Amino acid sequence: MMQSKEQGRNTYSVYSCSLDQQHHNRSQSKLINDLYKAVEEQQFILFYQPKFTADYRICGVEALIRWKHPSLGLLAPSMFIGGAEQTGLIIRMGYWALEQACMQIQQWEQKNYAFCPVAVNLSAVQFEHKHLIGNLEKLIQKYHVKHGNLIIEITESTAMHHIDDSIQTFEKLRNLGIKLAIDDFGTGHSSFLYLKDLPVDELKIDREFIRNLCEGSKEQIILESIIHLAIRLGLVVTAEGVETEQQAQILKRLGCQQLQGYLLGMPLPVDRLEANYHSP
Image 1 (cartoon, rainbow, N blue to C red):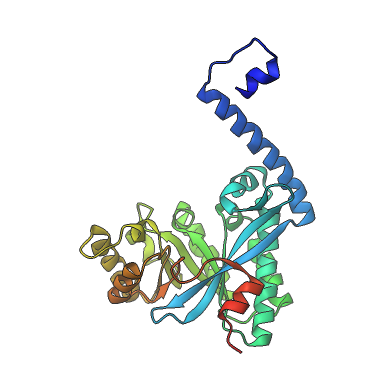
Image 2: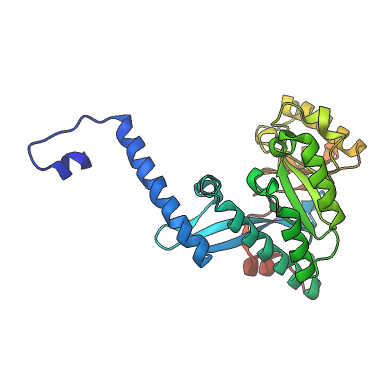
């Protein structure tokens, strides 16, 4: 209908899904153009979502990037990460996020606040970048990040893409004192086959297994197997997307050591995180 208006009076247009697609494409194209300026001007902020032990004590946070768009407001990663990867801007954006996280770790270490370790997600493009190890080494030295206070999260699909290369990169990261977590575990096809070979510290169970979790459900049976296996392999198990008390209780009973989700804590900017969770 807006198209008819633009064409003048006494005209009409037949609605088509293609019009929606054209509008979407134009919007995405503009967003990508805006992204270049955003990277130059660092229009980003890190939010931090707390992680909790099974008895609800905070045991770390996950850093999550947001875009403070000048006209659209605060944008979630799903709105712009794809464009950042498509344009290659993800490398600069990712380095910014890593540096901000390391800077924040240093501040929390100095204040002795219990928000460490801090987990940062890496995309496949970042994980495979040739300067990843060198850049991380510089940041750790610059901000004097203590061993174990930085966690790098890699999705299962990224880790499994080139398994031999992944193992080598993991080993180099661990040598820097960085802990490693497999994110979205359970969504790939080779999870159990290769898990024993990956030098990682933490397994984050994909929220799809948590969404419909209830007593006697198939999800409960699957989770019991995953948690049991991971613990036997010496891994810390974190459940993502915990939104109900029933889910939390089942996960605790199954032996899941860490919980993360809106039931316990939403992603917050650093000032609100400290105000909500730090006890002097």
